[in-house]
Every structure is written in C-alpha cells, then in structure tokens.
Image 1: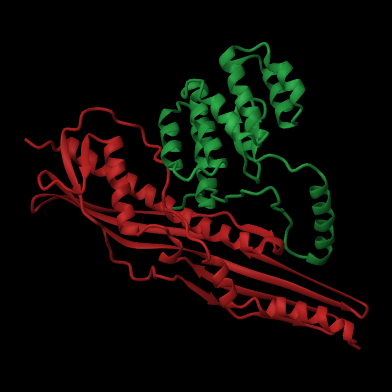
Image 2: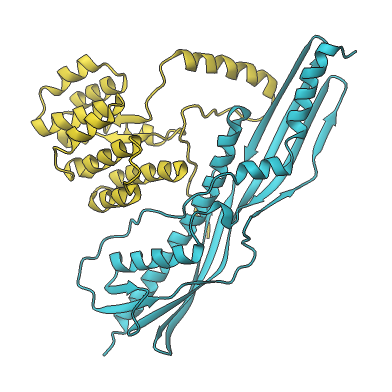
Length: 249
Length: 188
C-alpha cells in the first residue's frame, strides 16, 4: 500500500527517470561548445621558405554533419515489478557544428597554414596569387557514440530506494579530406587522407550529470580534432614531399 | 585505420570507477566514500613527480597536471623526498629539502610550492625571475599555469603552451603540456 508520505519519493524517483527524455539529454550534451584547436607537435623547420602556397578555404561537402547534431533514441527496456523496477534507455549521439567553437572550414585552413609554416619549406597563407595553390574538400566528418541511461527503483513499504547511472561511449570520430595541389590551372597532385579516433568509455554517477555530459561532448569534439590534426599533417607531408621531388624550375 | 588513442579527459578528483550493476548497494558505498573525501583535504590538481613516480602518475585514470623533477637536478632520493613533501604539503620540510639546491632550483621549487599553495601571483613572480627554458621549459609551463589559475583573460593560453611545446626537448615534457591543453579545452 502506498501512503501519502511515499508519494513524494515515488514521484521524484519516477520523474527522475521520465524527465530523462531526449530533450533534456540533448540540452545537457549541447550546453557547451569546444574548440577543435590542438597543439602542433611536428618539428619546427626553421629553414628559409623557398616557395609560397595559397591555401583556399576548404569546401565542406559532407551534409551529414549537421548544425545541431542528432540524438536518436532506441527502444527503452523496462523490467517492471511490484517492488522493483529497472530500465535502460539507449541513445546514439552525433555532435554537430553547434558544439564546435570554430567554423570547421576556417579552422582547417588556419591549421593547414600553421602546419605548412612550421614544418615545411613552403610559406603558406591565404593571399598569394602566384605559386602553388591547395584546394581542400572535407568529404566526411563525424563524431558520435552511444549514451545509455540505467535506473533501478526499489520500494520496501517504509523505505524507498532508487539509483540511476549514465554510461557514455565509447565514441568514435572520423574525417576524410581530399586535396588538389595546383600551380595556376595545372593540377600537380591530388589525393585523399582519412583518419579515425576512438574514445575511451566514460562512466560516472548521476551526482555530476551535467559535468558528465559536458565531458562526453568534449571528448567527441577532441576526437574529431584529433582526426583533423592527423589528416592535416598527412596532407602537409604529402604536398611537401611532392614539392621537394618536383622543384619549380 | 583505428587509432587507439585514449582521449578521456578527467579533470576532476571525484571521478568514480564503479562498474554498472547493483547500483543501489554501490550508492551506499559511494556516499560513504564521498563523506570521507569531503572530510579529508582536497588534493591539488597539480602533482610533483620524479623518475620514480612519473609512470604511475601518468597512467592514473584521474588526470593531473604533472610537474616533473628531472634526475639531473639532484639525487633521486633527494628529489623523491622533496616531491613527496610537496605533494603531502609538509611545507616546513620542503624548505629544509631545498636548501642544498642551487639558487635557480630553489626559485623553481618555491614557484611550485606557491602554485600548489594556490598563491598564484607569488608563484608567477618568482618563476619570471628564472629562465623560461630551464627544466625543459617547465618554467614557461608553470608561468602559464599560474596565469590560467588567475583567470588572466587577456592571455592566449594556447599560444603560450604551444611556445612551451616548441621549446621542450623531451617527449615526456611535451606530453605534460598536451595534458595541460586538454584541461584548457575542457574548461573553455
């Protein structure tokens, strides 16, 4: 029998689970945004720059990386019983532009310019009209992972207990960039690079739920940043190797 | 291609490592643990390490901002003792420990001490009195740490950590700087 004094905790317990809806979760995950920025760890090449290269603003051809990301809910599993109830809700979260501080195309160009200038014999900027040109297309980028919410509810007539636990990850990020190196209208070299990063699963109790969700989004953004960094370094190395093999006469 | 890079950022001291399942019983355990944690002194996010402890600290699940005392600075035993006293906040003993070191070393150790004591301005001023590139550029790193703790809005922390990264010669120091930047990414 449920008496009046039991109503409040039951209500709290039930609302703590039922309020855990996609919208609440989505708001928690997207409350903060993060930088794609990273520290360059390639060796500094201090030799005089012999050639110039103009880096054009990359084209983002992947429309699946949306402005707001996505949070897809999978069927919820519930174990109902008189004194015990357990449930598990599963979501799949993909980050979007709204949790990234920078515009991805502008960021990628700036990171390419930095990388060229620190580790190659080319002087890169976005202004030169002579010399090499590099066109970049971001073919694909994504960072996503599962988000599970577990809960238990135990009613012992005079004593009510419940607990919930969230479990995020492991997530993964992937990006693929293609490039075309030109001199005027002449295509000198082209190629594509791709990279994937996986994140360790996060586990944390509900006491710091907002921090936990922040951490998950931060982690996914960092993973995406990691793949972009690796791809940018690959492109710079490939272009630099081409220029060294084929010096302009 | 898979890159098994562990990228979990764990910037707080309260991360638990309980597995899922039997959550009600675990809640009780957790609450007791929480009481113990609150009752005790909160540990610093900064930790001083030596060759003896660096690997263990680096592999800990809860990430810290590591300050590394290189074996070139003195005997391993002396550095171990000094690091332990700083981490345990036994400040009187720390002052005794550092007497046998050079003036620059003493300034560095005191800078570390004040940083952990959360006297960031004092630490910063002391650290600016020594060459930034000393201790594999950790002086530059600690100066930036102080400014970061002081929430100096006008400072470009990423640029400063990048400069320290460019200056550092050892991979270990570079890893410490990367971890600093991960904290920065999370806090921004």
